[in-house]
Length: 210
Image (tube, one colour):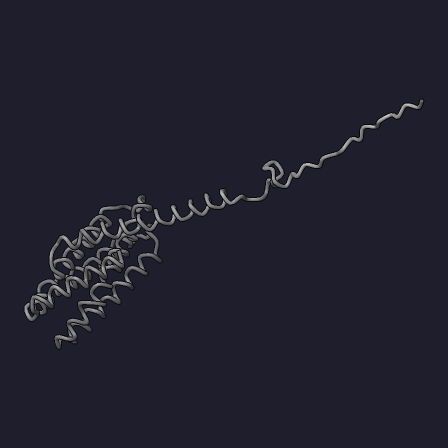
């Protein structure tokens, strides 16, 4: 009697590796990784925006504490003159300090002139004081010229301090005319509501430029 030999068939099972984490390419990003990157980017942007807003609030709050619009602008004048005095106290070996002070001065004057040209001088023209508005706004052009010349000549130029001294004199004369003549006259012609509106607009414009 013949014996039937049973052959055991070996079945090969292919494992579906497409569903295993180990088969993922080292160069592919999973959804969790992408989400983390996006989250980090959003978080960084939000922090930068918050920091910038905080800086603006701090800078403008220093002016706003002075009171009404004319007092705020007078405070800006004093702050700018203080920067001039620091510049005049330097020597040619302090190139970095001179550069930083010049940038600080430029930013302060840019913010201040923007407040005046976009709020106060238009109010002067509406009050039939076009002559002073045009005169004062024209002087802002000389301010920009001095800033340009100082930036171009270099902090080690032998006449750098003399140029700074001349510049300070121009700004101080401009400021005194505004504080002692023009602004008091304009304010005396305003109602309380108009004064409050100008104060609010100057503060808003200053915050944008801070």
